[in-house]
Length: 131
Image (cartoon, rainbow, N blue to C red; front, side, top):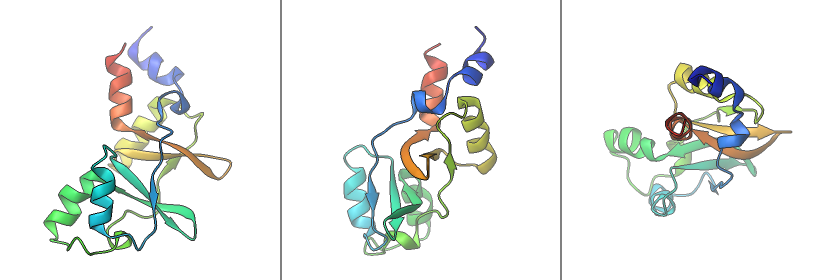
C-alpha cells in the first residue's frame, strides 16, 4: 500500500485525540499555561458554552511572547477565532491539506454540531512514520 493511499483511506476519527480541554474566555493566560503544563497542546475556548476558538502552545511562542502580553490577559484576547473544524469521516489526507492551506496545526473534529476530538499535524506525522 502506498503512502498516499494510506492517507486517503485512513479517517480523521482513527487518529484524533478524544481528550478535550476547554476554558472560558475570561480565563487568564497564566491559568491556560498551567493547564498546558500537564502536556496539553491546545485548549478550546468556549463562548456561551460552545467551543468557538482555540489557543495553542504555539500561540504562547508567537502571539503572547512577541506581543509581550501580560499573563493576566484573558484568553479571548489571544485565542484564534473562529475554530477551524473537520468531520470525523474526512480522510487524513483531507485534514493534512486543510491544515496546510490554513497554515495551522490543529483542527477540531465536529460531528452533529458537537466537537468530539482534535486532530493535529503530529497525529498525521505519527501515522506516516508508523507505515
